[in-house]
Length: 255
Length: 260
Image (cartoon, rainbow over all chains, first blue to last red; front, side):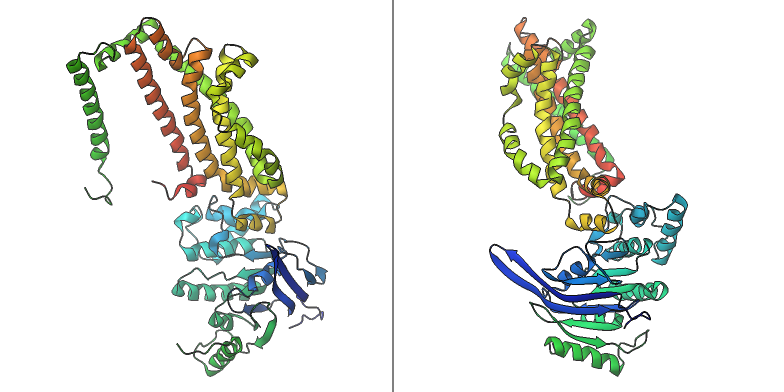
């Protein structure tokens, strides 16, 4: 997936990450290579603790790799940037601000009128009308997650990094949130990198799924999910792709 | 009574009032039956308070005590909050200053009395200074731990939206630490009110602390001693209840969700 200009949106080259702790060094990422196209929805799956989140934090500029380089639009990444927003599990919502205040948080450089318009627009998009003045403590987990997504979208980022965003939600809310995320992505067409340990989730959402190995992690395989949305979760092709990834990770799909 | 059920309105009022009435009755009859000359009865204390009102001392003393606590506590908050935020924000600075703070912190303000008198003489400033000392350290410590306990997710989110370090401190770190800072301020106010009594006993000739020592020294007026004690208790409780109201401010309420 390469844009018309021939340049990927993001390219991670030879990313190696080693953590030093108590005199021991732990290799977390081993020469990771990844390219993500403009407007692509890429999912990263892998066993828990394999370094998915480390890779995502590195691409977002919160961590610098021990060696290697991340480039976005051809420019090296040296730190976080408001053009690309990292969405945590709902823990990232500020509890001292209302829903409105949270969504408005990143808009401080804009005019008052522009801010009001954007806040209203994104509150409507994530379906939180009527909760503008509510504080996060009064909201459910799924609603908080929507606040965080709306806060990210409001600054009009061209990339979103999502780190297991629905991991803390119950399974029904999680299914609904997946649908909402796809709806929003189809409207906004940001480039999305979505980390999850849930293979079903990855195959339901992504244009491609990158499968990571155990630590020190490499990209083991990248699977093209050639099923158009909305995806039928019992179609043979869906099951075939999902089972292929399960096998790749080394899991039998029998309990 | 079911412990899960919210107590009824009349019960919330009835039981504490009943307990107070029983306490007064116990006090009254204990004094009457033992025929003690030292401990005054509740009625004698009530007469003592009336005498203070007649002489115009009651409101003046309460006012003086409150003013000293306001000055000492206010100065402690004005200096302690910025210092605590700075130390929490720069862990390197905290490592340098922390040993000194930890040595000064356990020293009772009462131990400072001789030094305070040498520095400021006998008078209001000495009393204010002692109260300040009592309140200062808990405020600094609460701010340092408040800032260093701010979850890194919040700092990251703030940086992600392009905040400069001063903006990050003002818009993320301070509001995230505020509930803990408020807890520290409340503890500090309680200590300031305790220290006030000792400070007024030695440094000044007005206020509720002075009333305790003066009533004893000039004619063993134990009715006035106990009256002053009760006033200190009641006003201390009122101050604490006012401070607890701060928890209801919407932007800090999240930090007190797990308290009752």
